[in-house]
Length: 221
Length: 289
Image (cartoon, rainbow over the protein chains, first blue to last red):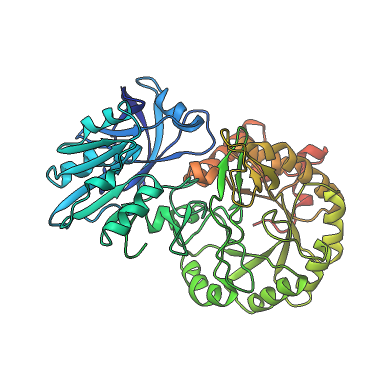
């Protein structure tokens, strides 16, 4: 578990989202689907963000500014410094034969890094609007649907599904692809197993997402 | 003299954080296993954060068998936080801990805002626990409502060896769009910076009233905050919410504390013990690690 205070390398708008890039320092990029806790300026609690992009010098996080913490994170300026802890949790298993990435909304955040590690597999992505769908430009080989169409329409049999998105999407994907790997989301305070705040109830069981997830096998979930 | 606040750290999940502490305080252990409250369990507010974990724990049997051996390997003193829904519950857990040499002290969590309250008063619970254990007993009190110094005096009379001050205070946060409660239990325990002056006042009053050793906690983010609690009467300081944002906080705060004390002319941080009361010095120290 490593925490560093890293300078911002840049912030770019992508539709309603922002890609926040930081100098990498000594942090490992980890496995796709793992996450980092980013301390938002002026906020008490850090925010969990999966890694979107990793280069030799930078780490990138795709952030949807939906609340005070995420807004503070996307409003950082170049050379501001952010305390970042990670990588944390369990990422996607990469030993898959025919991967298909299935994403919804800001759930596409880990896919650019995941796609690179899996040699650019096909991806199917669903978004709320054309503006949100601009984020698909970050994901190679992506087929896109915009509401009212749903991403599950594009699921096809015979693939190893790796999915990230809102809970109703993940539940729908599980029903269609019982072997899928699913990346879940929950509010977190610590990200490292200390607070027990990030549980989600899946099939009657409470799971601490930061240490048991955020990626869970659909069958185990 | 730096501890974690109970509930804010799982030393098995994060041994490198626990290793920075002078003693580790467990999450509250109850007679039976508890899954805890439904999600959503946490919410950040404009000031502080709310939690409603609901005393999730494996129960005393599994704690003794599965958790305590792992904690012992950390090689730091272990304080066990004990909870329940009646004085009998507290006594049942304390009696199981009594013979365990790995347990340095027991903290009686008589003030969790997220579960049903026992019918008995804090003092009655201390008394029931005192009857079954010779371990050092710390009563963890809330500063919400009533007279915390009177509760402290009653706990002292019932046999408490020390006080842990303060627990969280019940609060409510609403979803900005739906105006419904953010937490599944509606209310939760408020922690973080807003507790700071409340904790200081409680430590100040309880020190004056009882002279018992006090673990001060509530919004400690820096060495300065820790020093102020010591000045108010705490002989140990616990870190809670700050651990979530900064798992290196115990080591950082310990070193800041030494610097802050030195800058004010105190040879050690504990030389400032009780300084807020116009009295200084080691003559008041009791039970200081």
